Image (cartoon, rainbow, N blue to C red; front, side, top):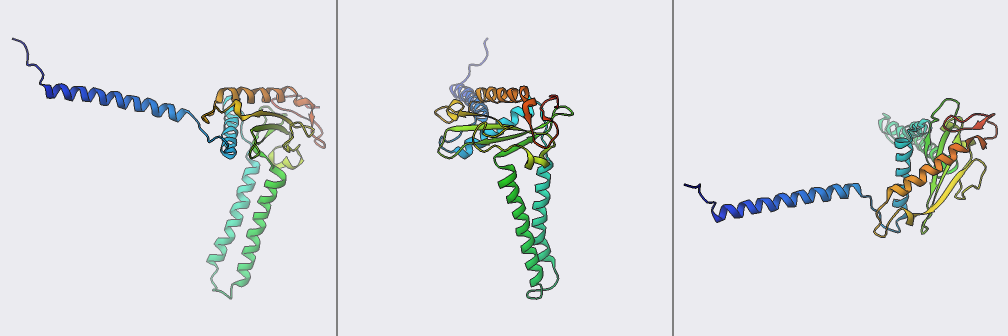
Length: 243
């Protein structure tokens, strides 16, 4: 004698379960694909520039094994916390207003002074720079990486300048000012973002990574020619010989 035949209701339940499992597997695959894709709204140059800059950092610090130079960032953090500390002092001072007017005045002056220091660093020292890197070998120079993508433009510029004495001496290093190769010691390249974003705004990382690596290789190959006035040696990268 054979076993019991499955009832129609049981068959429907099994079919529904199979369909549900297939849908869930498809949803998981779709989620994985969406997580891997990076999209931007075409014309939103601020978002596109941020995505490109982030990938530059990934290539340099991930694939090429450069380490970030955080000296200048630490200085900015200290200045920022010092400015915020003025607000704390104004709140904990024991005397009420108007007896504490001079404390409030001093705290406001201190806060604006610290804000002025940060604005000075951003406007006259860092300019378009977004990443500073340590040299890979002793005696070499670090890298200062800057970029530009003007509003309503499709031209993305990426520049590398040497930092022989670290990010704290960025004020004496060559400056990138939107014009590729416009100043001695600046190695820059320019490309249209249409090479790295498709018509749907999806960021195609592979060709952009190749472009970045080519620029870094060019910088490393010509680092000996990047002499920084007053440094007493040639600006080098990745173990280049000093003059």
